[in-house]
Image (cartoon, rainbow, N blue to C red; front, side, top):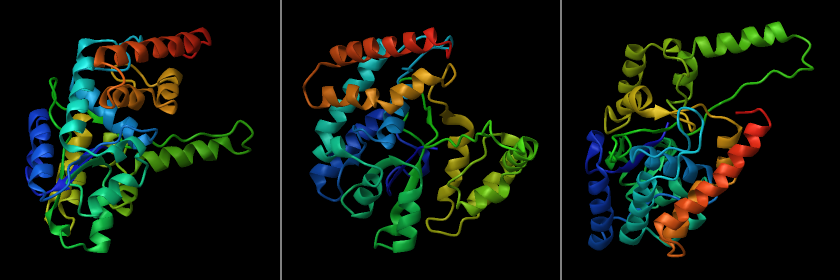
Length: 290
């Protein structure tokens, strides 16, 4: 799931949106650290981070009936906030962010905050930079509507129609998903179960708290993020083909970047994106996939 990785500061209690804006600016002007690193590019991490911020502002790709819902004042506010954050504490590189950028930015010692899975922290534990014991994890910042966000990636398992032993394949997938304790621990807490019973909450918390890397207990917050704040990309509806096409075409990062770069106002960018999404939804609805 997505979490905030950064240096010292608020630690596990989390940040509000106003604190995020303030801290990003302070970090730059004080020259103690770099600013925030939140991508606005054709990159899966940018999709995850920006849809997470939309959710915290009460903005969603679609509603519970799987109808496009992006064209709202909440979206306009979220997009304008991110433009302000960029101007206050980010660098132009966020428009060319890729899957490695979050890690490089934080581990260089230049960046003070990223939105990512835990790979940057785990890499720091291997490389042991001087600031490794000052790296913390937080839940996503509180927006106008609290905290919500996406899983960083979601695994999807399929069985080919041409498979010759479908029963065994189905049993394998059931066994894999139903008993996920070993997979979670072996992944160093990267991978969490899809189903709560696959690794009971108390046991999962105990495993996260037992991680021996300093600062001790920093991984415990992941259990809260997973149980309270994580949703699917189509929330409050279901993720469907139209949601996936929106992700594949990086319409959400484009919507944010157009405003941050001064090419469009927030309202114009949101309206344009909503029009594109409505055409995508209409296509997939006509195909019977929504």
